[in-house]
Length: 121
Image 1 (cartoon, rainbow, N blue to C red):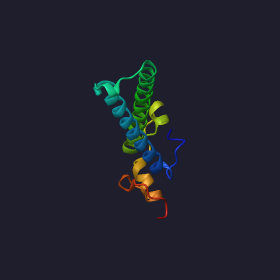
Image 2 (image 1 turned 135 degrees about the vertical axis):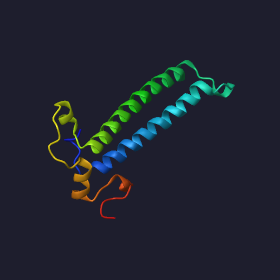
Image 3 (image 1 turned 180 degrees about the vertical axis):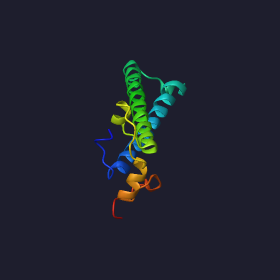
Image 4 (image 1 turned 90 degrees about the horizontal axis):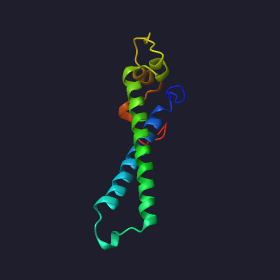
């Protein structure tokens, strides 16, 4: 992942992960409410809707867990300055600068500027 997302696109990749994580959480909340807490007659599901709800809940859990792990991996890489491949090979980071310092010095981007603004505006 660290080799596929460049320093200029890191901000947008993190925003994508955060938005996807929030939508997954929202979907799980809606499905959980409708499936577990809706007890009126208007909420009665037939067999097809029950199976569809179960499938969608399983898919939402998978997307939520995958997005959470990706987000934690990216944040860990930013905080420590060690990429995924270097961490897997157990290489020590030879530079004293972290990845976050390198990104800030090269592109003027920091974690506080994570907004939906386009570059140059």
